[in-house]
Amino acid sequence: MDLNDRTRVSDIMSTPLETIGADEPLRDAARRMHADGISALVVTTGGGCIVTQSDIIGAVAEERDIESTTVRDVMTENVETVTPDLMMEEVAAMMTMYGVKHLPVVDDDYVGMVSSTDVAEHLS
Image (cartoon, rainbow, N blue to C red):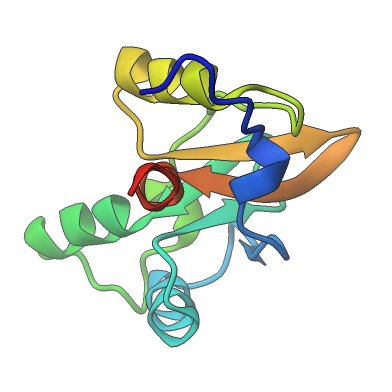
């Protein structure tokens, strides 16, 4: 990564932020992600949580019923967040350090999502 790169999260984050309620069926989360071409949703009723494609794949691999399983049952809690003014190299370092592919962007409230795909597209 070019350490002279002055790209900030706000330059590459995905907006508008896509959200889902914690008590929604997992099937709804999967359908939303598929329809919107995204791989994570911020959970609005979970307090700092997201549900990702990996969470859904894990539930399917465990043979859970995705109609009766809710987002709350599989969501990732207490996720790390970033601010819109954070520099790209810091985002990449956080993703590596925490082993995550998505970081919600927070500025008083959730405003977007930055993903490893956003970082990779920026670098290419």
